[in-house]
Each structure stands twice: as C-alpha cells, then as structure tokens.
Image 1 (cartoon, rainbow, N blue to C red):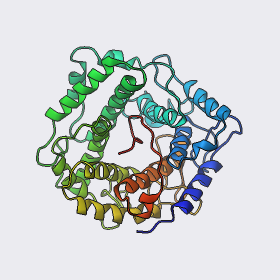
Image 2: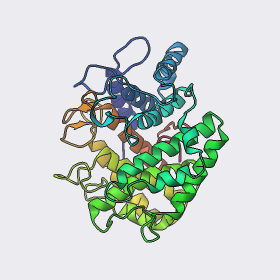
Image 3: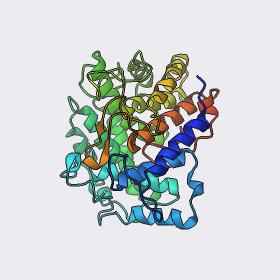
Length: 371
C-alpha cells in the first residue's frame, strides 16, 4: 500500500477551505449543496485541519475568534447548541444519542484542537453523580435491536464525564466514569464475542451493529488506559466485519450495496483494531493485513473535489437538510471521519506511507486522541 499523503492532504484541505463562508471567524458549511454554516461543520473543519497539523496557519486572532465562536453557542447547562440544526430532523427534541450531548462531544474536541476549552461546566455531571444514577441509567438503555443507538448515548455521557474530570477538574465526574466502566465490565457483555447486547452476531449485519455499538464504549476504555473486557474475542469479532472490498460492515447504512461500507462502519472497526493491536500480540498479523486492505478502500471514497463521501454513489443527509451531501460529492462529516481513518491506519501501519505521515492528534476524550 503506497499512498501519496501530501497529495491527499492538499486535496482534502482544499475541499475544507472551499467550505469556509467567512473571512473573519472561521465558519464552514457542510457541502456544496448547502449555503449556511453550521457548528457541526465548523467542528469537522477544525478536527480535520488539526489531523493534518494545518491549524498553525491561523493567526492568534483567528484562533481565539474561533474558540470564542464555539463557546458563544454554549447553553446555560454547558451543552452546545447549533441554532441552525436543532429542532428538525434527528435533532428535534434533543435526543441523547444525537442531540446536544452529541454535538458537544464534537465541539470540545474541536476546542482542544484549537488550544481552547469549554467555558462553562456541564450540569449533566451533577445529575449523573447522584448515588445509583449511573447504574440505573445504563440498565435502562436498549441492549437489543437499538444497541448501536445505545452506543452513542453511552459514549456521549462518558466523554462528557471524562472531559469534566480532565478539563474542568471535577473529581466527581472521574468517579462517575469509573462507575460507568465498572458497570460495562460486568453487564450485557459476552465472554465469547467481547461485544455487548443481545443481537445474534453470527448474522453479518447484526455483528456490524454490535461492533459499531462497542466502538463507542471502547473509546472510553482506551482514553483512560483501561483494557476492554474479553479483548481477544473482541478482536475476532471486529476482524470478521471486514468485507471483500476491504471496508468494514455489511450494509448497516447501505443495505442495497452492503460492501460499499460507510464512513462510520469503517472507522468503527479500524479504530479498535489499531488500538487493540497496541495492547496485545493476539492476531497482530491478521490485524495488519486487514488494515493494509482497508487503506485503498478508504481512499476510494475521496472525490475529485477533494472531499470524502459517507457512502460511495449515495447521497447522505446527516439528520438535517443543512447536513446534506449529494451523491458523489464530498461533505464535512465523512471528510473528517475518513481522514481520521487514514490517521488511525497510520498508527497501525507505521512502516507504510500512511504511517510515515506526521499525523497530529489532540489529547481530548472522544474520537481523536492518539493511540
């Protein structure tokens, strides 16, 4: 696998630059199909540029203006709100899996990339530090058909608690994180698969759902330097999600052409394979071979315009009309997520061209911390 990373970088950053809509404070729109900037898109821009170590091009004034812009969208309870997005689509009613908690997990990572931090503490910490609250909330999640939604819910909560502990210096949040991970160690996890929930993971699409769910919780373990339960069995399960085209998954987001895997399906397997391979020798050769096959597949999803698509040859709307990517056209969310896939491949394949590239990670819970 030989990738010209300087060319990939130049094309990707050119796509991101063309989504910018203001000359002052950096603000970005999602794709060529929409006109208005969104907080999500600006966060994706910051995180993508950070991976390529491009934020050094900002002046001090631009950097601080961007930090201030993000923080101006904090509600009184500390969670961030995108005024363009919320109230329509997935985001109507502020659901825990994709509402303000989800946005906040992206914005805090973008702020960390910029050298900033969320200005206000998170009131959610008070709620989940009450005795017994973590356990009762976790037990009330859906561990069956909607376990992948539960994956987002738990990741959002755990990430905000880790952030409150590390950036707002709230020791109560740290104890809550320990309670959350202790609970996950002991409940709804299979010793045979290393996965959580009741889905029949002998079915490829159900396996993909279960791995996508687990990816969201494994990030909490990895950020805290904690070994996930039954890790060798989990490696077996994740390796089994690779499809004949080199991507991962079997139709979660693309049932008519299941081997054209989505940006989510790919990162949700690439990330844990890389991180687990650094913790154990188990099937390390198989992991390396899987990652080598994945690299060309990820790059197939880059368009002539430099951006990346969520699914090849398919339009995709990320829950709202202002987060819409037409078929064959790049969009900000998949551009960030597939760039992150390349960066993680680099960590797992240090001898390859993608591994020799000097990727830049930030120390923040969530998605973009270094293995």
